[in-house]
Image (cartoon, rainbow, N blue to C red; front, side):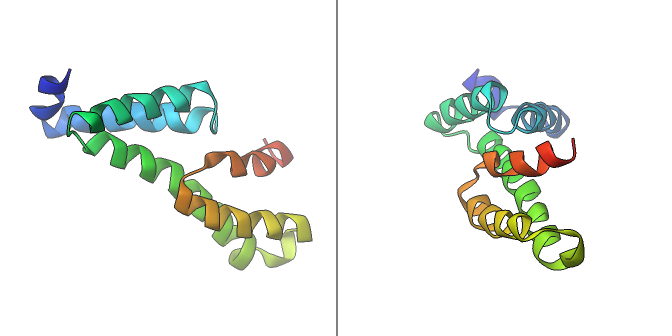
Amino acid sequence: MVKTLKVMSEVNAAFLGIGISVLAAIDMGGPCSKAATVFTLAAMAESVYGPNGELRMCCAIPLLGLAISSLLVSRSKNTKEEKQFGITAFFLSLAVSTEVAIPFAIKDP
């Protein structure tokens, strides 16, 4: 697996990134994203850092979007509780914890 990851072409790396992104985003911290995390951590143990970077970006960017949306863009559309979730989402996006997005997803699936 390590040899395949190290010699992977740009196109194949893009498909791997899409697969990791789908796994990480599909259940917001559930078993699919945990499987993607385990895969990328195993790759990091073998000095292959690209997949983990892709995973971290796809987990942090949605939370940053939620934070910006709840705090800046649509201030009049959000309740006080949602604004507090936005602040939490901003800080936890730095820690790459996607579970904060669950209250937003439950409100409007």
